[in-house]
Image (cartoon, rainbow, N blue to C red; front, side, top):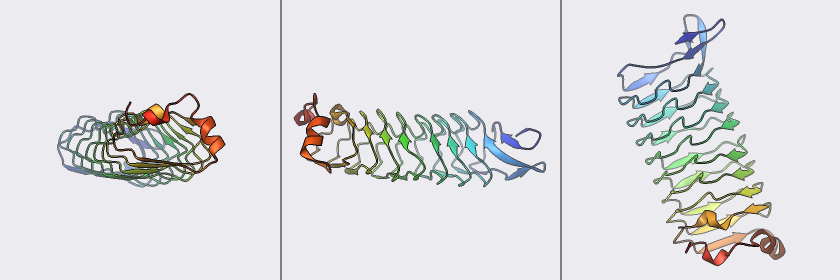
Length: 232
């Protein structure tokens, strides 16, 4: 723990306890954050419980905790840094708190055991590589206010079966490459950027439904060979 004048931040961890519950108060001061790299490469950690009052998790805080299975995050968190859970190969249960507005790149990259995730409504952009390589991911609940799905954010999610992109999304970048079980997509009429190459390697993709007009669709795919999506 590192003490400041009015608060405390978790600076690092060198123990070998499997199940860790971070203190809400330390030396009479509230714990408000978890620093960059604080638990990185902690090989024994299996469960982490973060208390109410913590508002941010720094970059790489739990990266490469290869035995971490569950992370419980409080709704006081508003910011999750880059690669926080990257390469947590056994992570199965984690929640994104409802007050998170800032989700950084690569947060769950290569979390190969993660099967489902609910993304809260305050998030408007899914950054690059967020769920890259999450090969067990089957279910994603997108936020209703989502506007942008960034490059490679779901590439290699080979167990995704279907996608319903929310109605406010305007930018769908090259996000779903090599989702080999993906069979159907529903796209909103709000789209102004659609990169068909983002579905390359989706060898079982059979159905693409667009909610807008034929004219909108033709304009959207101009310059893209839509027939080559699952062959490219």
